[in-house]
Length: 310
Image (cartoon, rainbow, N blue to C red; front, top):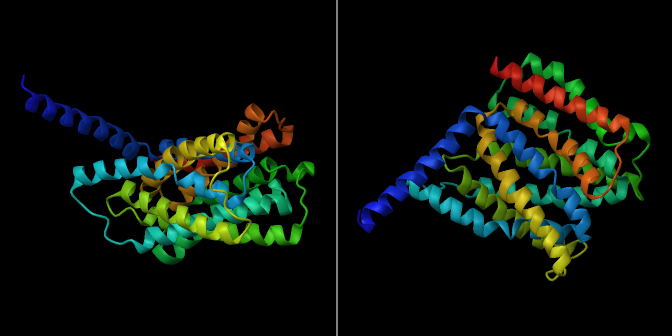
């Protein structure tokens, strides 16, 4: 077998592997979405360990992911032969994502992690609402049934029932968390609309825009440390790997294949996963009510996704 034949066989096998992976995501997008949400849940813990400013953390979450996403997007383009047609939608999604990262990180310090987590996760209502208003997407009875369970789960997981939420500037922090929630919901809505047949290419553009917006926004607000030190950079590299390269990429691939209310519900696994990650890596002991909240989120997400399949 000569080199040309071996090369062609290698390309064919690579395409087959990618095809099988894409087929799994196409048939089980809820599973891919759940894995993505759990991967994203690692980032709050490692960002806390990095001890960096919101701008620094947001910028270095995105920057290391860009070379990897560029390679994946190039392979996607070669396979499909298509190009990303519009750049403004991914750019806007990236700016909103950066706004969410910057504002929510500051809101944690101002109003406390618990209340900020609850407020930012009102996306579970906002994203389906946007889809209903703009796309006329119907909301199922299963989602209406599961919504109170999901909201109660987020409240308990955030520690509000234990009085665990504290902050130095509650009014300012609550306002920042609400704006962060609007940015987060807008980002999720645009991400699922911007597939264009090239989800990886679109997500690459989203991440590039988020990196630039984080750099500019962070420079004017608490600053961006371009040399945070090796220890801090190591933690931020872990955040980039788990969140931007794995987590949000899976969300970008799977969310267009799911109704908006299903994707928004599954993303509530992120705060539940963050509780588990904090217990493992930060030695934080979740209270029984927080564990109950995690269980309610799992139940609510299961109800929404299973009723969808049935």
